[in-house]
Amino acid sequence: MNSRDVIEQHRAAGRRFEAAGVGSFVREDGPPAGGEPVVCLHGVPASCFLYRKVLRELASRGLRGVAFDLPGLGLADRPAAFDYTWTGLGRFCAAAVDVLRLARFHLVVHDIGGPVGFELAAAMPGRIASLTVLDTLVEVDTFKRPWSMEPFARRGIGEVYVRTLSKPAFRMLMRLQGVENAGAVPRAEVDAYVDLLHMGDGGHAFLKIMRGFERTRAKRDLYTGVLGDGRYPVQIVWGANDPVLKLAVEGEAARRAAGVEKIHTVPAKHFLQEDQAPAVAGHIARLAAA
Image 1 (cartoon, rainbow, N blue to C red):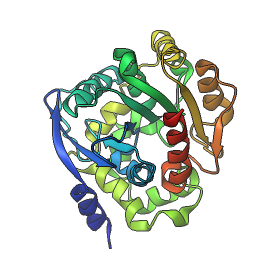
Image 2: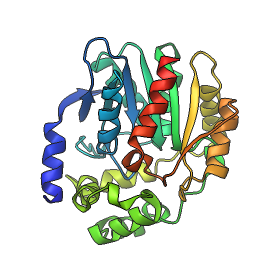
Image 3: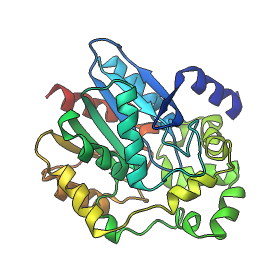
Image 4: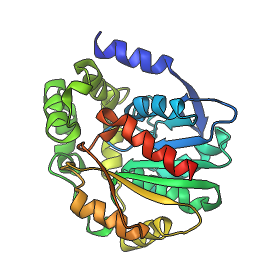
């Protein structure tokens, strides 16, 4: 099996939908009636493909896992005129949960899916049943992109970087930063990340996302407020060995904002959904049950 086969299997496991005038792709797993919905938001350079194992694990626990592609990534459309800031992506998510008829849902966020998901939660706090935070950023005004992501934000350099990002190079990056247990992710699945990143526009919308980070004090205050809202339970789950968003820095910032005593750690790097899906789903399910 190659990456093309992996993507076709992925495509067959979900469906297209449209929200806010943008076409996207959603995967769902679990009981359509009776299972509480869990909306899982991805970051970069990823798509809802990242959650494929977590969705299965949530379904096995009686929950209905829902993961959709953000505009500009995965199998979603990549309109040139779209607002690819966290604000714009958050507005899309608000429209998406309406189109998908998710009246009340548990929310899971990861990477820049954190700021995007915090925008969603700020817009509709009464519809959030619980919030699980995975390896993301909260104190955005002081955040500096890791070395592996910074070139994408630089004009000219980013275009070269994304055009020349090869599958062997991405495999190495995944071993260094993404996955603790490399054996948990077959090569074809790792390669699928590259194909999904380049699909349709060669990665140009992804570059707009990387250049749309809203690193302001106002956004930090908004996101801190979402974590400390009090109308829904919040937990922090982190890859203990994440070299991208470090447990002692970004993890502690999220814990402080949420006002919780403990960070639940798993033996993983940045993409903990890949090699720690059962543990991640277990934490989500326990909070949902509580």
